Length: 209
Image: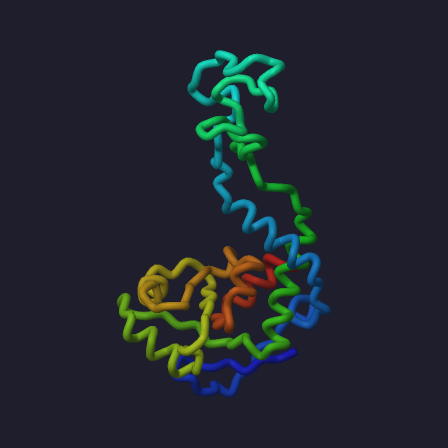
C-alpha cells in the first residue's frame, strides 16, 4: 500500500511512501479497540470519590425510639440512611480503576485504529518539516494548505517538537503528538491524521517489534 507525500504547501512532491500492510491494511478488530480505549479512559480516572457511610457520619448513637409499639418501622440512631443527614448506603469509595491488558491486544487496537484511518482516507502523509519559531499563523496556513483546517486534526511528529507543538497549541481541535506517544483513543478521536514522513518509521518500529 502506498500513499502520496505532500509538502507543507499542500502540493504533491511526486514521491510515494510505502505503508506497512501489517499495520495499515489489516482487518480492524473492534473488540480490541474497545478494550484499549476502555483502559485509556480508566487510567485517567482519579478514583477519589468518597461518601460517608453510617459509621462515619457525625451524630449521636442514641436510639431514637422504642423497639416495638411505636406504630412504625424500627429505627436506630440519627445516622440511619433513611433519615436526612444520615449516612449513605453503599456509597463510592476510593479505588483504582485500572486493569491489565495484554501488550499484543493493545498493539492490535492501535493497528486497527490506523487501518480505519486509511480506509476513511483520513491519513495525510507530509514530508518532514519544522518551523523557525513558534507561530500560530504559520501552522494555520499549513493546515489550510493541507485542506484539514476545518477538521479535528492530529499532527504526528517523529519526536517531540516544541516549536510545532507551541505553534498548534492555541488552534482549536488541533493536537500535536510524537509518534512514540500515539494511542488508540487519540487516533480515533481525530477526524484526520497528518503524519510526518519520518514518523511512519517510528510507528512501524513500535507496532511490529
